Length: 355
Image (cartoon, rainbow, N blue to C red; front, side, top):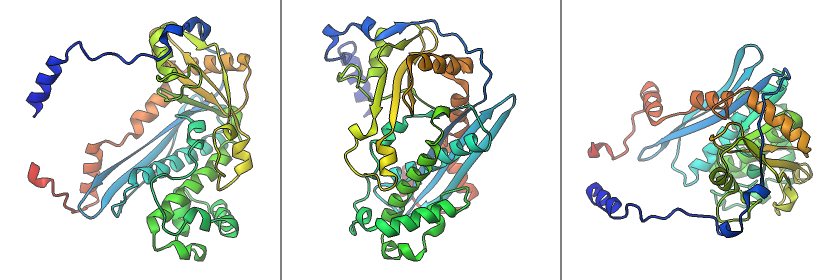
């Protein structure tokens, strides 16, 4: 089979065309990009950065998973915060979404501790908070008992109160699974866990967003096309048509309520009223363009200042701490195999016979 694919690749060599923006003929990149030498900020400040990871192994009648998150703090010396968990779980069709919520909760709790306990001046988050808020409800589970509607009102209020009162270093909702208020939902435990973890993620995110001036979200990739309204993401267009250091001329101010039509299960008014400042920057010539997001309305001068601060602790055009956190926390397939062996889990995959 592989030989046939190699032959097909040879036959198509040079004929597979690059996908170009659907408005390329009208594209004048000078109107959207400002070539600008970016200097390192002379200011003194502390920084933190974090990332998360998860991986899983599928067996015949279960799945084994590991999930972890890490924050690194630099203030004259390097410090570390981490959360992790591993467990077996029954086969569910939405396992990836469930584990992504677990990972996100760990990441957010790391971020919150870095700001509260270590008082960092700026904290770099890998990804987009604004993008996460556009999908407040789980997509994977189809709950037969209308969980989203049933766990509302007084039930949800008590659940939120229980989460807030719990001093916990992990997934708080896991500790109250047997609480009487959740009794009606315990027959469909994983659909329940999916929704509860999504609620807990919003609870922790709300607490984190009480510190907007410290938070800087940074993405290496993005599907957003708000600037060029093209079939190609904005970040890809900037990366293709520019090479110099600089900042996007157009700064976006995005309000959550303009894109989200559903009601958030918790703190709806707070989340709906959030405004995000979004722009693009390249820190070094010929390096990748980054999408940068601030959870408040920032002026252009503030944007320049933030970019200079990011540049100060970056290498090869990317924040060093974000890169280190990613490399520290990534859980590989080899790691999963080692964890299974250490935990003495003996399960069949029925792929053993394939060698």
